[in-house]
Image (cartoon, rainbow, N blue to C red; front, side, top):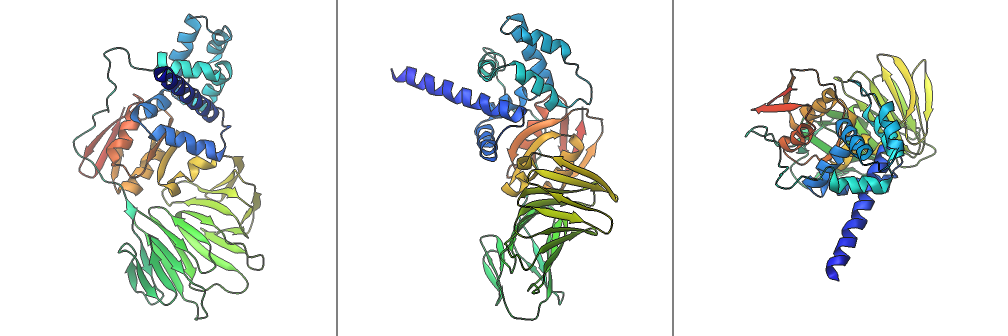
Length: 388
């Protein structure tokens, strides 16, 4: 009887995973469900492989052929005929069609009988190279107004009477001292967290910085950033919080949002997680609702679009979360987080999906990408070469 109980538990978990994958395909997962899916993916290499297979356009094509051959659902045949894979096609839109035709239970069934290894087959990790590059960690430099530079990765310490470091977070206390201009700089292969004098919390990604006063004025709270930062703003109706990035102001009262403005990216992306913000400069002004993002490229405002927030702020939870991502975008993240040099030799016309912890050596991330069959890597010292 215990054996049957375990079987039903396995089946229930399989259907739950199928529901989450279907929701991911259809962009209908809640934030909690996205985290549940992430935990399931990261719980085993087999789950990670299955997720890749079920969100891969070639695997889905094979899956649709398998279903049609067995006459499981006649409508699948019509669906298959309407699908035309193109070199730069959006895999999510294709999968959305397939997911509409294939019920959640059928996806779970496919998980066992289509994508599982056949007898005698072993799905091992892709071999890349014996070399490896370790991930980043908590690293930052505090630059005081007098030019003094303090390393912030040396453990808990008291910097001054109103600045202390505890558990990898810099805390600024409210004070009556004359305000000084401070800057926290994150090098490659680093990240850090900060609590500003007003209680607002800031996460800084690799190769980023923030400038701020040691005490905010009575009228406004203003900071300037580069790279990628995530904010959770303490509410204060009398003092708006303003983030300046490349001549653009992001204004908030009490809210959470992400700004990505690396110099090697071709656009600034501001994404609202909760609350409300206003993004403006001398010529434009836009207000965002939660789940919206605005892109600005070389002075051109590209408008507001709905996005999956979980993938955008995954770095703050120390994850790589790839969502229909190009290899060029992924490898720029690799360069910053692993302090690596990347050389892309071939054009990779494929969009990647997957989730992996940022605490792993680079080989684990590259193996995840290689398992799609669309890209290969070679590591030589600190250099990563990318080929088809």
